[in-house]
Length: 238
Ligand SMILES: C[S@@+](CC[C@H](N)C(=O)[O-])C[C@H]1O[C@@H](n2cnc3c(N)ncnc32)[C@H](O)[C@@H]1O
Image (cartoon, rainbow, N blue to C red; front, side, top):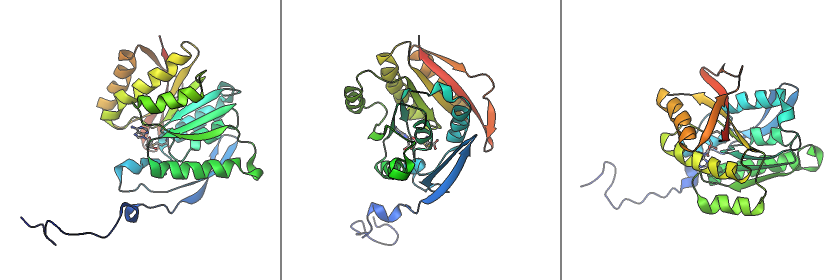
């Protein structure tokens, strides 16, 4: 059977890069007293897997919360999951001892590294200990590599707007469990959750509980971000 516009052996001379928009714009963000500039897109790509090229409402919520409560971060070692362009991790690096920003998408890792470079250059020395690593949730090899390099684990695991795909939520919680386990009782997962579907709201709570975690809403953080409801959760291993 022939497809419209060509036969089955039709050759299309366009590689994947043709479809990637990397026309990033240097953009200023203000979170309380913190002003931060980084490269990002202003509208989402049509590729479902390139969500990380722009700053999401969950990052706005988390960064507002962290800038108002910077004592949570002071001197800490932090790992961020699904960092995207890095707006949360880069803000944290102004207060933390070290910040490992992670993502699974190669294209996103490129812009993440560019933003890290921007913030660790000589005129921008207030950001220290920033590094980007590839981490696909559920990958035991990648998490092992990170934990081999950070054998003491982390004080905080952060995530902004990373619960929007049903199939990835159990894998996300597997990874969070491994990270929390290293410093059981001393490490917490701060998740800025943005509600887009009731089924996902329930799934986040259920996955936390089924992984032996305690999940609690941080009082006063439930708010409208964009046109959606967001909340900050603190999640610990019981
Ligand atoms: C909606 S974006 C949020 C980006 C950023 N945290 C923010 O709030 O602006 C979700 C991010 O998670 C990453 N991500 C999605 N699924 C992932 C997975 N299975 N493993 C690791 N990262 C993933 C995406 O590449 C993207 O950067």
